[in-house]
Image (tube, rainbow over all chains, first blue to last red; front, side, top):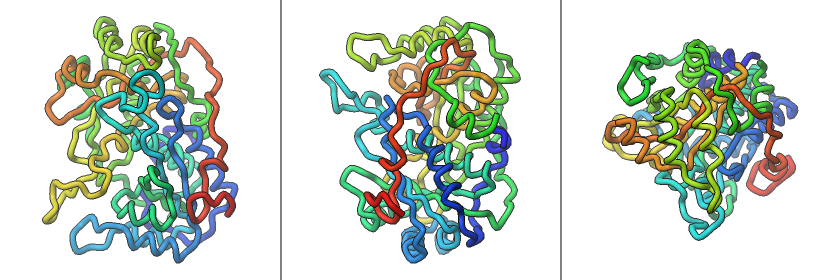
Length: 194
Length: 194
Protein backbone atom coordinates (compact mmCIF):
# COMPACT_ATOMS: atom_id res chain seq x y z
CA UNK A 1 0.00 0.00 0.00
CA UNK A 2 1.22 3.48 -0.90
CA UNK A 3 2.21 5.77 1.98
CA UNK A 4 -0.49 8.37 1.27
CA UNK A 5 -3.12 5.66 0.93
CA UNK A 6 -2.27 4.44 4.44
CA UNK A 7 -2.08 7.98 5.84
CA UNK A 8 -5.54 8.84 4.54
CA UNK A 9 -7.06 5.36 4.83
CA UNK A 10 -6.05 4.62 8.44
CA UNK A 11 -8.97 4.84 10.83
CA UNK A 12 -9.26 4.49 14.57
CA UNK A 13 -10.81 1.02 14.81
CA UNK A 14 -12.86 0.15 17.88
CA UNK A 15 -14.65 -2.98 16.65
CA UNK A 16 -12.51 -6.01 15.87
CA UNK A 17 -12.99 -9.54 14.65
CA UNK A 18 -11.60 -12.09 17.07
CA UNK A 19 -9.76 -13.66 14.10
CA UNK A 20 -6.10 -14.38 14.90
CA UNK A 21 -3.26 -12.18 13.65
CA UNK A 22 -0.25 -14.10 12.33
CA UNK A 23 3.06 -13.83 14.10
CA UNK A 24 4.57 -12.65 10.79
CA UNK A 25 2.21 -9.68 10.69
CA UNK A 26 2.94 -8.88 14.34
CA UNK A 27 6.70 -8.96 13.75
CA UNK A 28 6.29 -6.73 10.68
CA UNK A 29 4.45 -3.99 12.56
CA UNK A 30 6.89 -4.15 15.49
CA UNK A 31 9.75 -3.91 13.01
CA UNK A 32 8.16 -0.72 11.66
CA UNK A 33 8.14 0.76 15.16
CA UNK A 34 11.78 -0.22 15.59
CA UNK A 35 12.77 1.88 12.57
CA UNK A 36 11.35 5.12 13.94
CA UNK A 37 13.78 7.95 14.60
CA UNK A 38 14.35 9.15 18.15
CA UNK A 39 16.16 11.83 20.12
CA UNK A 40 19.90 11.16 19.63
CA UNK A 41 18.85 7.63 18.65
CA UNK A 42 18.00 6.86 22.30
CA UNK A 43 15.13 4.49 21.31
CA UNK A 44 13.47 4.82 24.71
CA UNK A 45 10.55 2.61 23.68
CA UNK A 46 9.53 -0.94 24.49
CA UNK A 47 6.41 -2.94 23.69
CA UNK A 48 4.59 -5.55 25.73
CA UNK A 49 2.51 -7.81 23.50
CA UNK A 50 -0.52 -9.10 25.38
CA UNK A 51 -2.42 -11.97 23.78
CA UNK A 52 -3.92 -13.47 26.95
CA UNK A 53 -7.65 -12.74 26.86
CA UNK A 54 -8.02 -12.43 30.61
CA UNK A 55 -5.16 -9.98 30.84
CA UNK A 56 -6.58 -7.94 27.97
CA UNK A 57 -9.94 -7.78 29.72
CA UNK A 58 -8.24 -6.76 32.95
CA UNK A 59 -6.39 -3.93 31.17
CA UNK A 60 -9.65 -2.89 29.48
CA UNK A 61 -10.98 -2.44 32.99
CA UNK A 62 -8.37 0.27 33.58
CA UNK A 63 -9.72 2.46 30.77
CA UNK A 64 -11.21 5.75 31.83
CA UNK A 65 -14.60 6.78 30.55
CA UNK A 66 -14.12 9.70 28.15
CA UNK A 67 -17.78 10.76 28.37
CA UNK A 68 -19.17 10.75 31.92
CA UNK A 69 -21.51 7.80 32.48
CA UNK A 70 -20.61 6.07 29.22
CA UNK A 71 -18.15 3.20 28.79
CA UNK A 72 -15.02 4.03 26.82
CA UNK A 73 -15.55 2.66 23.30
CA UNK A 74 -12.08 1.14 23.39
CA UNK A 75 -13.07 -1.35 26.13
CA UNK A 76 -14.67 -3.74 23.65
CA UNK A 77 -11.76 -3.23 21.26
CA UNK A 78 -9.28 -4.43 23.87
CA UNK A 79 -11.48 -7.44 24.66
CA UNK A 80 -12.00 -8.49 21.01
CA UNK A 81 -8.76 -7.70 19.18
CA UNK A 82 -6.51 -10.75 19.55
CA UNK A 83 -3.43 -8.66 20.26
CA UNK A 84 -2.88 -5.70 22.54
CA UNK A 85 0.36 -3.79 22.19
CA UNK A 86 1.22 -1.91 25.37
CA UNK A 87 3.58 0.89 24.37
CA UNK A 88 6.10 1.81 27.07
CA UNK A 89 8.91 4.33 27.36
CA UNK A 90 11.94 4.62 29.57
CA UNK A 91 11.92 8.05 31.17
CA UNK A 92 14.78 10.58 31.40
CA UNK A 93 16.57 9.48 28.19
CA UNK A 94 14.98 11.36 25.29
CA UNK A 95 15.43 15.13 25.42
CA UNK A 96 18.23 15.11 27.98
CA UNK A 97 21.84 16.19 27.71
CA UNK A 98 23.90 13.04 27.19
CA UNK A 99 27.38 14.50 27.73
CA UNK A 100 29.12 17.60 29.06
CA UNK A 101 28.53 19.60 32.19
CA UNK A 102 24.72 19.52 31.82
CA UNK A 103 24.57 15.71 31.48
CA UNK A 104 21.28 14.38 32.84
CA UNK A 105 19.48 17.72 32.62
CA UNK A 106 16.72 18.45 30.09
CA UNK A 107 18.03 20.02 26.88
CA UNK A 108 14.80 21.93 26.13
CA UNK A 109 11.82 23.55 27.83
CA UNK A 110 9.80 20.40 26.99
CA UNK A 111 11.61 18.20 29.51
CA UNK A 112 11.27 14.53 28.66
CA UNK A 113 10.60 13.83 24.95
CA UNK A 114 9.43 10.25 25.63
CA UNK A 115 5.87 11.01 24.47
CA UNK A 116 7.16 12.44 21.21
CA UNK A 117 9.51 9.58 20.34
CA UNK A 118 7.02 6.91 21.29
CA UNK A 119 4.38 8.51 19.09
CA UNK A 120 6.76 8.44 16.10
CA UNK A 121 7.19 4.71 16.62
CA UNK A 122 3.47 4.08 17.13
CA UNK A 123 2.51 5.95 13.98
CA UNK A 124 5.02 3.87 11.99
CA UNK A 125 3.33 0.83 13.52
CA UNK A 126 -0.24 2.00 12.85
CA UNK A 127 0.43 2.90 9.21
CA UNK A 128 2.18 -0.41 8.57
CA UNK A 129 -0.69 -2.29 10.23
CA UNK A 130 -3.11 -0.43 7.94
CA UNK A 131 -1.05 -1.47 4.91
CA UNK A 132 -1.49 -5.12 6.03
CA UNK A 133 -5.27 -4.74 6.35
CA UNK A 134 -5.06 -4.60 10.16
CA UNK A 135 -6.84 -2.11 12.38
CA UNK A 136 -5.37 -0.18 15.31
CA UNK A 137 -6.33 2.61 17.70
CA UNK A 138 -4.21 4.94 19.79
CA UNK A 139 -5.71 4.55 23.27
CA UNK A 140 -4.34 6.93 25.89
CA UNK A 141 -7.11 7.50 28.41
CA UNK A 142 -6.53 4.86 31.09
CA UNK A 143 -4.82 4.25 34.41
CA UNK A 144 -1.24 3.84 33.18
CA UNK A 145 0.13 3.20 36.66
CA UNK A 146 -2.20 0.23 37.17
CA UNK A 147 -1.16 -1.26 33.80
CA UNK A 148 2.53 -0.70 34.59
CA UNK A 149 2.07 -2.57 37.88
CA UNK A 150 0.18 -5.41 36.20
CA UNK A 151 2.87 -5.86 33.53
CA UNK A 152 5.70 -5.50 36.08
CA UNK A 153 7.40 -2.55 34.43
CA UNK A 154 10.72 -1.45 35.95
CA UNK A 155 11.08 1.88 37.71
CA UNK A 156 11.44 4.84 35.30
CA UNK A 157 9.57 2.99 32.55
CA UNK A 158 6.06 4.28 31.90
CA UNK A 159 3.10 2.85 30.03
CA UNK A 160 2.08 5.48 27.48
CA UNK A 161 -0.57 3.99 25.26
CA UNK A 162 -2.52 0.85 24.46
CA UNK A 163 -2.91 -0.25 20.86
CA UNK A 164 -5.31 -3.05 19.92
CA UNK A 165 -4.23 -4.89 16.77
CA UNK A 166 -6.60 -7.05 14.76
CA UNK A 167 -8.87 -7.33 11.77
CA UNK A 168 -11.42 -4.48 11.66
CA UNK A 169 -15.09 -5.31 12.09
CA UNK A 170 -16.19 -1.82 11.05
CA UNK A 171 -15.35 0.71 8.32
CA UNK A 172 -15.87 4.06 10.00
CA UNK A 173 -15.96 7.30 8.04
CA UNK A 174 -13.06 9.63 8.78
CA UNK A 175 -13.60 12.10 11.59
CA UNK A 176 -13.74 15.67 10.28
CA UNK A 177 -10.44 17.50 10.08
CA UNK A 178 -9.74 21.21 10.18
CA UNK A 179 -8.89 22.67 6.78
CA UNK A 180 -5.23 23.20 5.94
CA UNK A 181 -5.75 26.97 5.92
CA UNK A 182 -6.74 26.77 9.59
CA UNK A 183 -3.47 25.10 10.57
CA UNK A 184 -0.85 26.20 8.04
CA UNK A 185 0.76 29.62 8.19
CA UNK A 186 3.52 31.23 6.16
CA UNK A 187 6.58 33.02 7.53
CA UNK A 188 4.79 33.84 10.78
CA UNK A 189 1.87 32.56 12.82
CA UNK A 190 -1.52 33.69 11.51
CA UNK A 191 -0.40 34.58 7.98
CA UNK A 192 -2.49 32.30 5.81
CA UNK A 193 -0.95 33.23 2.47
CA UNK A 194 2.61 32.58 1.27
CA UNK B 1 6.24 4.15 -2.39
CA UNK B 2 5.12 1.29 -0.15
CA UNK B 3 4.63 2.08 3.54
CA UNK B 4 7.36 -0.27 4.76
CA UNK B 5 9.78 1.05 2.13
CA UNK B 6 9.27 4.56 3.52
CA UNK B 7 9.46 3.39 7.15
CA UNK B 8 12.79 1.64 6.56
CA UNK B 9 14.11 4.00 3.89
CA UNK B 10 13.52 7.29 5.72
CA UNK B 11 16.72 8.81 7.05
CA UNK B 12 17.44 11.90 9.09
CA UNK B 13 18.80 14.21 6.39
CA UNK B 14 21.16 17.01 7.43
CA UNK B 15 22.62 17.96 4.02
CA UNK B 16 20.23 19.42 1.47
CA UNK B 17 20.36 20.72 -2.05
CA UNK B 18 19.13 24.30 -2.32
CA UNK B 19 16.85 23.11 -5.18
CA UNK B 20 13.29 24.39 -4.77
CA UNK B 21 10.44 22.19 -3.52
CA UNK B 22 7.19 22.58 -5.47
CA UNK B 23 4.14 23.97 -3.75
CA UNK B 24 2.31 20.75 -4.75
CA UNK B 25 4.80 18.64 -2.82
CA UNK B 26 4.56 20.97 0.18
CA UNK B 27 0.77 20.79 0.20
CA UNK B 28 0.92 16.99 -0.07
CA UNK B 29 3.13 16.56 3.00
CA UNK B 30 1.06 19.04 5.01
CA UNK B 31 -2.07 17.15 3.98
CA UNK B 32 -0.48 13.99 5.38
CA UNK B 33 0.06 15.73 8.73
CA UNK B 34 -3.54 16.90 8.68
CA UNK B 35 -4.78 13.29 8.51
CA UNK B 36 -3.02 12.19 11.69
CA UNK B 37 -5.20 11.03 14.56
CA UNK B 38 -5.25 13.02 17.80
CA UNK B 39 -6.67 12.90 21.31
CA UNK B 40 -10.47 13.19 20.93
CA UNK B 41 -9.75 14.63 17.48
CA UNK B 42 -8.50 17.87 19.09
CA UNK B 43 -5.92 18.48 16.30
CA UNK B 44 -3.83 20.77 18.50
CA UNK B 45 -1.19 21.21 15.79
CA UNK B 46 -0.28 24.04 13.47
CA UNK B 47 2.59 24.53 11.04
CA UNK B 48 4.50 27.65 10.12
CA UNK B 49 6.17 27.28 6.72
CA UNK B 50 9.32 29.38 6.55
CA UNK B 51 10.87 29.87 3.11
CA UNK B 52 12.64 33.18 3.77
CA UNK B 53 16.37 32.42 3.83
CA UNK B 54 17.22 35.10 6.38
CA UNK B 55 14.54 33.85 8.75
CA UNK B 56 15.72 30.27 8.33
CA UNK B 57 19.26 31.32 9.16
CA UNK B 58 18.03 33.24 12.18
CA UNK B 59 16.14 30.18 13.45
CA UNK B 60 19.21 28.03 12.78
CA UNK B 61 21.00 30.35 15.19
CA UNK B 62 18.63 29.22 17.95
CA UNK B 63 19.74 25.59 17.69
CA UNK B 64 21.55 24.22 20.71
CA UNK B 65 24.81 22.40 20.29
CA UNK B 66 24.24 18.72 21.06
CA UNK B 67 27.95 18.01 21.56
CA UNK B 68 29.76 20.66 23.62
CA UNK B 69 31.96 22.84 21.42
CA UNK B 70 30.57 21.50 18.17
CA UNK B 71 27.91 23.16 15.98
CA UNK B 72 24.61 21.27 15.75
CA UNK B 73 24.64 19.41 12.43
CA UNK B 74 21.12 20.65 11.73
CA UNK B 75 22.29 24.29 11.44
CA UNK B 76 23.44 23.82 7.85
CA UNK B 77 20.29 21.83 7.08
CA UNK B 78 18.09 24.74 8.11
CA UNK B 79 20.19 27.13 6.04
CA UNK B 80 20.20 24.99 2.88
CA UNK B 81 16.82 23.26 2.72
CA UNK B 82 14.45 25.62 0.87
CA UNK B 83 11.60 25.00 3.32
CA UNK B 84 11.52 24.89 7.08
CA UNK B 85 8.36 23.58 8.73
CA UNK B 86 8.01 24.87 12.26
CA UNK B 87 5.70 22.45 14.08
CA UNK B 88 3.59 24.07 16.78
CA UNK B 89 0.97 22.86 19.24
CA UNK B 90 -1.74 24.54 21.23
CA UNK B 91 -1.34 23.57 24.87
CA UNK B 92 -4.01 22.30 27.30
CA UNK B 93 -6.22 20.62 24.64
CA UNK B 94 -4.89 17.12 24.07
CA UNK B 95 -5.12 14.83 27.08
CA UNK B 96 -7.56 16.98 29.02
CA UNK B 97 -11.13 16.29 30.11
CA UNK B 98 -13.39 18.02 27.60
CA UNK B 99 -16.69 17.70 29.46
CA UNK B 100 -18.07 16.85 32.89
CA UNK B 101 -17.02 17.92 36.34
CA UNK B 102 -13.29 17.48 35.59
CA UNK B 103 -13.39 19.63 32.43
CA UNK B 104 -10.05 21.34 31.87
CA UNK B 105 -8.09 18.94 34.09
CA UNK B 106 -5.63 16.38 32.74
CA UNK B 107 -7.23 12.98 32.07
CA UNK B 108 -4.02 11.00 32.67
CA UNK B 109 -0.75 11.09 34.62
CA UNK B 110 0.95 12.35 31.43
CA UNK B 111 -0.66 15.78 31.55
CA UNK B 112 -0.64 17.48 28.15
CA UNK B 113 -0.47 15.03 25.22
CA UNK B 114 0.59 17.77 22.75
CA UNK B 115 4.00 16.19 22.17
CA UNK B 116 2.41 12.84 21.37
CA UNK B 117 -0.17 14.15 18.91
CA UNK B 118 2.25 16.44 17.16
CA UNK B 119 4.69 13.57 16.68
CA UNK B 120 1.96 11.46 15.03
CA UNK B 121 1.39 14.28 12.55
CA UNK B 122 5.08 14.86 11.94
CA UNK B 123 5.77 11.19 11.27
CA UNK B 124 2.93 11.14 8.72
CA UNK B 125 4.61 14.15 7.17
CA UNK B 126 8.14 12.69 7.21
CA UNK B 127 7.09 9.36 5.67
CA UNK B 128 5.09 11.09 2.95
CA UNK B 129 8.04 13.39 2.20
CA UNK B 130 10.25 10.32 1.90
CA UNK B 131 7.79 8.78 -0.58
CA UNK B 132 8.16 11.94 -2.72
CA UNK B 133 11.96 11.74 -2.67
CA UNK B 134 12.22 14.55 -0.14
CA UNK B 135 14.40 14.57 2.95
CA UNK B 136 13.42 15.67 6.45
CA UNK B 137 14.82 15.68 9.97
CA UNK B 138 13.09 15.90 13.34
CA UNK B 139 14.98 18.73 15.06
CA UNK B 140 14.07 19.30 18.69
CA UNK B 141 17.17 20.71 20.37
CA UNK B 142 16.75 24.48 20.10
CA UNK B 143 15.44 27.53 21.94
CA UNK B 144 11.72 27.05 21.29
CA UNK B 145 10.75 30.21 23.17
CA UNK B 146 12.94 32.35 20.92
CA UNK B 147 11.43 30.78 17.79
CA UNK B 148 7.89 31.25 19.17
CA UNK B 149 8.65 34.91 19.74
CA UNK B 150 10.16 35.37 16.28
CA UNK B 151 7.15 33.76 14.58
CA UNK B 152 4.68 35.63 16.81
CA UNK B 153 2.95 32.58 18.24
CA UNK B 154 -0.08 33.24 20.44
CA UNK B 155 -0.03 32.47 24.14
CA UNK B 156 -0.53 28.76 24.94
CA UNK B 157 0.88 27.73 21.57
CA UNK B 158 4.35 26.20 21.71
CA UNK B 159 6.97 25.52 19.09
CA UNK B 160 7.82 21.82 19.37
CA UNK B 161 10.09 20.91 16.50
CA UNK B 162 11.75 22.19 13.35
CA UNK B 163 11.64 20.11 10.19
CA UNK B 164 13.73 21.05 7.18
CA UNK B 165 12.20 19.86 3.90
CA UNK B 166 14.18 19.56 0.69
CA UNK B 167 16.03 17.31 -1.69
CA UNK B 168 18.72 15.27 0.11
CA UNK B 169 22.36 15.93 -0.68
CA UNK B 170 23.53 12.84 1.21
CA UNK B 171 22.51 9.17 1.52
CA UNK B 172 23.42 8.29 5.09
CA UNK B 173 23.46 4.72 6.33
CA UNK B 174 20.78 3.98 8.92
CA UNK B 175 21.81 4.52 12.54
CA UNK B 176 21.99 1.23 14.41
CA UNK B 177 18.80 0.08 16.09
CA UNK B 178 18.33 -2.17 19.09
CA UNK B 179 17.18 -5.65 18.18
CA UNK B 180 13.47 -6.44 18.48
CA UNK B 181 14.21 -8.90 21.30
CA UNK B 182 15.63 -6.02 23.34
CA UNK B 183 12.40 -4.01 23.09
CA UNK B 184 9.56 -6.51 22.64
CA UNK B 185 8.19 -8.49 25.55
CA UNK B 186 5.30 -10.92 25.85
CA UNK B 187 2.53 -10.83 28.46
CA UNK B 188 4.74 -8.97 30.92
CA UNK B 189 7.82 -6.75 30.87
CA UNK B 190 11.09 -8.66 30.52
CA UNK B 191 9.61 -11.87 29.08
CA UNK B 192 11.29 -12.19 25.70
CA UNK B 193 9.43 -15.29 24.52
CA UNK B 194 5.72 -15.60 23.70
